Image (tube, rainbow, N blue to C red; front, side, top):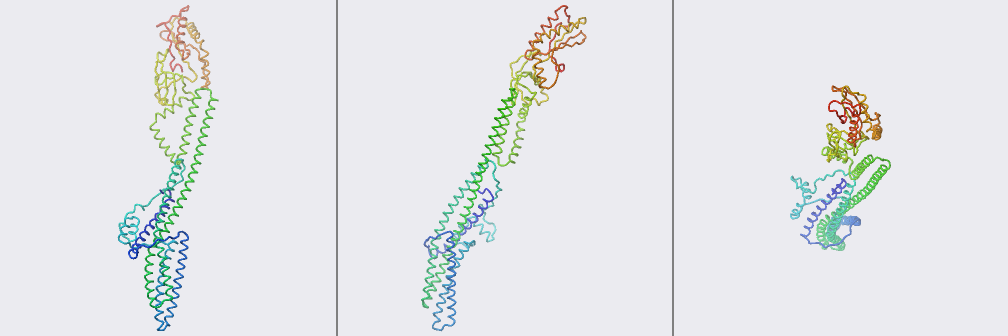
Length: 583
């Protein structure tokens, strides 16, 4: 039950006092056994306790000293008379001297017994003695007393004492966490209940000791009164009567010694029990003080915890309202709200950890260990979460963007915290259609050097296609270039506004200036003839339709008079521009 060094001091003091009380109990048993063997059981009598008992003992000791002095004075006077007395009065004086000597012995014995009790009450401790055989056997069953006796006699191999072993208690620091404070409150409450139980048991033991001591005190008082009566009778008695009084006083003195020897351990024991109760009362007061302090600290921490938690929630609501008010882009709004939610839960977790933890150092140690374990066990998950923030960055991926990851092309349909979902598209390079499958990639794919992650330029949804045809060497290349470029520009005119809008969005997003995308022609000499290449931007969603229209327009341009003669297959080829050519 000892939770602090101060508690350990109380326990040690009480244990020492209890051992002394137990030793006095055996002293009482030894003396009482001798008394019962010769005279029987004394009658019981009540006596007051407390401070009045100390005062009564002091007055009784003073009276006993006065009686010793008075008797000693009378004895000295009679001895002086005895030296000058004549034969007739010599016998009478000798009898008076003998009677006074016995009376003096009784008074001195009584005074010595009272002074022993008074000295012990003032702080002196009693001493032990030999025990009778049965009591000695009972004493050996008590480890504390057996160990003390072995130590005092100097014998080897003492009896082990499990209850008196050293008890070590670490320094009890003030609890700081809410859980530690609650635990400490329950511990202190349990300690107070145990102290109350020990106090009640001590009161019962003190009452039992008083019941044993009361008849002994009554007998001592009766013996003292009887001695005073014998002293009064000696003043008016003759020599023969004085001789009888001497014998009675000697027997009374021996009886008084036996009874006082029995009462003395109980008197000392009663004083020790009062000290034990006082020590328990001080311990209980200390525990109550600790309880009130911990309760006050708990209430303060609960209030601080509530205030901090309220501030975190209020700031979270302010953040949410500001996002809905000032962020118009749904994608950006979703990102800010997601970031708000993550920061909110992290702040709540940290607040709870600091409120419940006992020591800040333990939080750092625990956080370091748990972080290392999480980093090893959830390495891929952590990389996926980190990849999420790369994907949703300024130039990141949005829902609806067409991307190519590890050779898989598809449109983004969902960006999760750890996974990326694509609706796969397939077919020829110029005619891609959904395949009906959804492909799932971990967000950690952005950290893989072999992942081959491609996406559209932010703010754009157009591609570059080209149509190429090889003219016969004797063809008019200027006319051919004009007709084919005109056919492409005719189709491009229907959607060039949307392409230019995307171009402006791209310039605003990337903060760069590039050429406006529009159809352009290139000529290239080959061994077969003159190759004409027309490059043009197409919208991603309608690329197939645009390619079909441009093919039809180019065929019509070739059929015009004068007809353009092609070499090879004679049909123009439309295909996407490769990455190198597009660059």
